[in-house]
Amino acid sequence: MTEGPEAPPYGTSTLAEVLPSAAGLLGVSGFTDTLGLADLVRDSGERAPSAVTVLLVDGLGWWPWRDSTEITPTLAAMAQRRLSTTVPSTTPTALASLGTGLPPGAHGIVGATFRLPEDGAILHPLSWSGGPHPVATQPEPTIFERVARAGVPVLSVGASAYAESGLTRAVLRGGKYSGADDAPTMIDAIAGHGQGLGYAYVSDLDRAGHVYGVDSAQWRDALRAVEELVARLLDALGSDHLLLVTADHGMVDCPDESHVSIESLPEFGQVLTVAGEPRLRHVYCRAGQSDRLVTLWREELGERAHVLGREEALAQGLFGATEEDYADRVGDIVVMARGDTLLASEVDTFVSSLVGQHGSVTDAEMHIPLLAAWGSGRG
View (cartoon, rainbow, N blue to C red):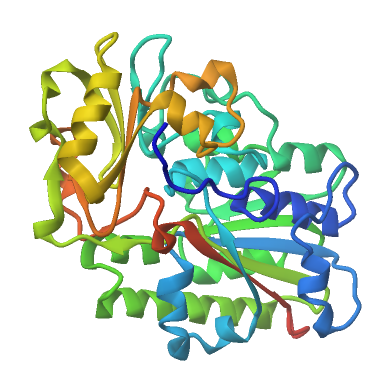
């Protein structure tokens, strides 16, 4: 077995522990404050929250943010801790772990796109509107369902278009969904939820990073908008309402000269399907061919990517403890970009053309913030 990347610390300090810890802090039966949120905000004085809201900022990586704290004084003043996201470091997988409290191998949403072995179809979770059925695809109970069953109010706030999406129904179902298509509506919805567990999602920072890169004026402008949103939220929340800010992944910029075509790799004719995204590819092969391709591709890609067979990736714990029913959703080969390499493919030419990318296992992609502050009491 080749040496591969380090597995995330599932169960102790990843995105999957955020909602269970928030529920534990609220005293919901069956949940524990694994992340030590009570200790994180202890300097603010002893108080028990009536409400905890988790604001997930898509694309707010720890390291790009830490390089820009001078333009985010509100975020920088919050209590802070660094967490890890999931493998892959991508929105569908990360949101599934956030929503279920489980590692990817236990909820089965193993990538930006991946193959369902029962029919060979490629699932695109971000555009999931028809089949397969979300609950059949991800049947594990969500944190929201469990908290709501305990009699604690649950509110999710996000774009109206996401209310009935396949991904929402698969991994974030439970409680009430409030559509909010602008910042004032989102702030009003969260501030009006004075008891229980809340969740809100914003995507503009991620969009700016993909199009312009994280080392861009446009990304920093989008970060300033996040700063303004958080400042306004804290002003609107009561003093017993705890706001947690976190993210699903970070991002790296991939210049044109860093692109490698998956289709150009040796003996690509033995490949049936390519899925995933440009920083982590799930590759599904003809029977009996994966071991040979792993050897050839490791030699071809060298330091530009980690190339692991499925069993290696699972054994190294990259997807966490993996249910047998979900193992075959992982590619026969998992190719994870290193440095600023981009693994371009004909299956997603537009996505492969974007500057900012994520999905792989570098610190810039994997490390995310957990920021905490109480409302100002002026809400």
